[in-house]
Length: 251
Image (cartoon, rainbow, N blue to C red; front, side, top):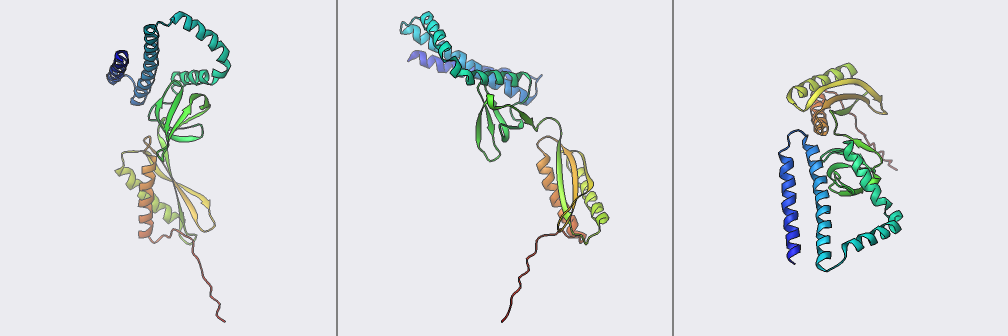
């Protein structure tokens, strides 16, 4: 019982020491610091557990050397069945070495989008935008799309009626873009009216593009849509929407 208490005490102290050690590091980015902190706690926990089991075996007079020898034989027997675990650890190592992802990065991995919460030796935890926490074995991370490296693109498509003047609409939208750009520090470049993007069945689509700080593209898009809608209304430019016509036949 005493050894179990000591184990949890040492584990708690070790976790705190690792956390404080990384908090004092100023040479790394916040995401990279959290990533290395997470993997360090992971390794420390496995190492401490191994020592704890060794002490327990000694207390019960088990021969550690014989157990290790037996473990080697058993390990050889089940080696083929443990290939998945080995692949997880190896893949996790190269993910960290190549800095493919960091904690708090917005990524697409294994068909899931979300924010990285933790990178471990065996699994990576990904928090989806609906709140779901995905536990992804590292071997399933065959490709990574990291959306958190560099500035991001905000894209807004606005449809106007075929009856409206396209040049006038583009001038109105660009004036709105200039106004929003002067108010928003998260916009790094633009927004600019690119031009006519498409000719729809009932509208002419005008595209606006801007570059924003990372993870701020959605907020900028929402602000642009609101401001553009209000400006178009003020200038009498219609944004088409579906109409339904009911025909009643009287006998």
